[in-house]
Length: 221
Image (cartoon, rainbow, N blue to C red; front, side):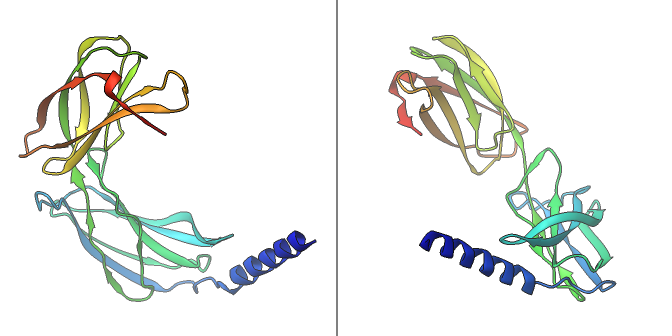
């Protein structure tokens, strides 16, 4: 009986909270301006997609609903955009997609409706790591290899091997390179080694050799 009462109270609180969130009025004009750049090189990033997301009321707060307007950054990395509210959103946020050869963890930014907003975005240009992997004594192939940016995963199927894998990396930044195999006794658990690699310079392709003995890996969830 107590559990039923708690559930009813929770549902009542959620309904009360969401009912208090009102849609923003329609036809309010808002101006946006800003810069997209690479913080390592301080160079502008052109042709990035800048888009306005409209949010609606969700069970636990606002959730993304749809994109209502967008633009591209110019050759100088700058953008300008003006949009009007639809009357169907509870809030609006601005997001940036810099392109497949860039990496960012910057999320959507809050927009102050009816004003001029200056919002900058950043992203790291991705470079290539040509990784030579020298594997010995792998008790449970395959060996999986991937980096901080898991756009590519390499797999080495033999117990001993000399192979080359290409991974996306960020220069002048700490990149983590992961080597994993399934635990023999508990396949759902992985044995792993994690290397930290800081690649200096801005060359398009870096090279590095890894000596890997999976018998020395530590058990990880």
